[in-house]
Image (cartoon, rainbow, N blue to C red; front, side, top):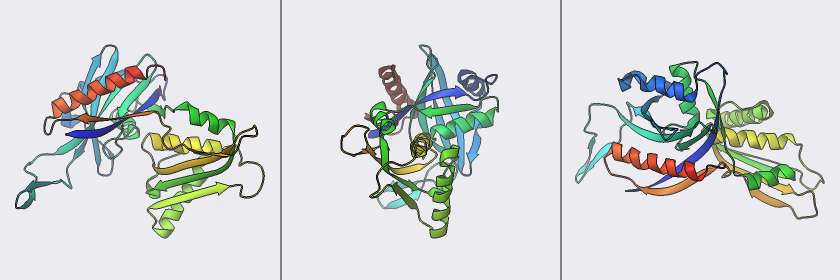
Length: 284
């Protein structure tokens, strides 16, 4: 079965200089033989555990599982559907690979399973000495244009505005506006557009900080970002240009033929794919 899989790349930094390294945090959890004792409830309805971990050629590889104990899928038969034939729990996993030499994390991205932000929350819940900040790596070309030009207009669209995470101060008021509008009108998607209209000039530089903060929050799974576009006017006499920043988080997408019902082989294929892609992005 061919599946579309996305990898995103992040920089990892210890929040506490005296805290655990990512390697130490993962090794500590991996030392717990009973996987059920590794589980942590990260949010309501979201139970996460470290499923696999190994060192490979100086890098760290593994998989986080989201454990499901409710809302099981159906078993489909010729004459209809039956309850799933298991008395146990079920789960889905995301693979990851970490390169300590430059603190780069490559992680399979599927926020419905375990987002990178939730994975870091899980490590902290297991041991509060293991607290990490992750920052999405960006494709630089459009962001360089964005930073260099004056912003004439910016458009931000977010789904599930009541489920936004925290954001840096320059964007806090806008995020609060998203939450309040979503609650007031029961709107599943909110879009805000700010622009200069017919006036000359550009928006304040804080608009650039807002765009970067929201993009970073979405990159770690803290927001369901639907649109992030800006119209910029370069410093020279070039015409205004609209750039789409929503896909600028450094990522790699591919289709992989995964087995129908073999979790070990399934992981091994994704593990090897991450290893190759991390090697290719060695200079980013």
